[in-house]
Amino acid sequence: QDPQPHVAASSAAGPVRMATAARGVAIAAGAAGAGCILAFGATKLLSSPPEDKPCPTERARRDVFDGAAKKWDETVRFDELISGIGRQRRRLVQRAKGDVLEVAVGSGRNFSYYNSAKVTSLTAVDFSRTMLEVAHAKRKDLLPIELRLKLASTQKMDFEDCSFDTIVDTFGICSFELPVEALKEMRRVLKENGQILLLEHGASTWEFVQGFLNGSVHRHVGKYGCYPNRDIEKLVQEAGLHILVNERKHFGTTYYLVCTRNPPVDDE
Image (cartoon, rainbow, N blue to C red):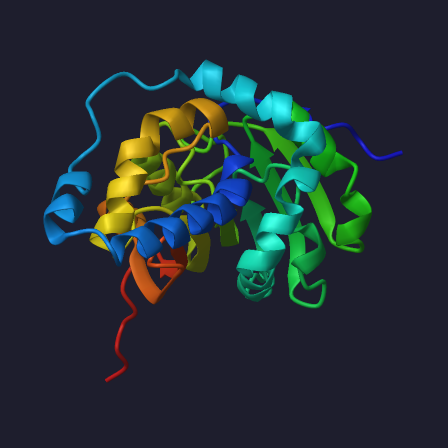
């Protein structure tokens, strides 16, 4: 019988990155349409930074994820279908190889995309016990890949340095309490020649769309547990990672990134 998820710490966040990616696309689309008819002055006004006030605590956000876990796949399935997020997941995850770590794994929506001819093992962590229970029920989607589930904090993992060939995170950076620290921790446990694969949603390249994201951030994080207006590229660079592939979609709100620990060394 399959073992139950192993328990460790807490603070990653797996759920929102999935649904909110699609929701962010919807927000972006509506915002862009409105932007075509509003004056530039209104655009400048709405693109101002969000009001500085406390957001929900880590514990409160975990409660959001725990409460949504059982119906998470049902909730996000249609949104991901119409926005093309499922195709982006498959494309990204099929790059994974060797011993893989997936952080903020949520309900295990990526499991069916891993290539058993390339992946030796998968260790999956999340801070929501209920999400891990949902992921546990999908173990068969990974066969014959070995799976280890772990309740753990992305910003403080107990793995040794340089443990994994590939690290995967889909729509997790928006939910991390300390995103740069979490990314630095991913970098720490990545092998020297490894890769970090990121599919995220965050700040838009469209000023008016960013205004919508800024204006709704407190309501959004309270309802979905994530911050939809973060500059993902900037956070990745602050963590010391080098970006090899950088693609943006949906008015710049969806990020497809392939990263390494260090810049590639040119052969002389």
